[in-house]
Length: 191
Image (tube, rainbow, N blue to C red; front, top):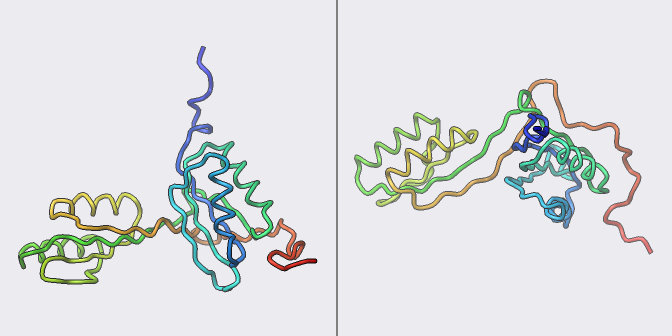
């Protein structure tokens, strides 16, 4: 008899969470500890301030099933420095990553070929030396993997990735009005 472990609803897939938190020291490590404490490997973790410089938006990508994802969302929502948490649905999300590639480019012919690759993928050449070119590429995993596969033929010296950032399309937002605001004085010393 087969069990339901292979159901689509319980399958482990990459999940993207968007989290708004206080922009204070120690908050990012609190969030990361929550995931590691529960045995999750964070695939990507990015952070940056929002329009309000007191608030940081985190984009966290983990591989998990539905029940573990729901548990993580619930646990994040209960944390004091967290303002809002949302699991981003694939059909409503724009996901992008910035990757810098430093590639061997010793001859002018090779440099021209690499520049053509950058143009095809809507990338930019951001540094040129006698022996290397550095490209900036923005895109999803498929685009980044495609560029990497082509550039490996030239010899990638280094690459640096920002991690995935995400924002919902159209009318969808992260705003969570269900959490009581101002309930705690996070970060203030109380004697």
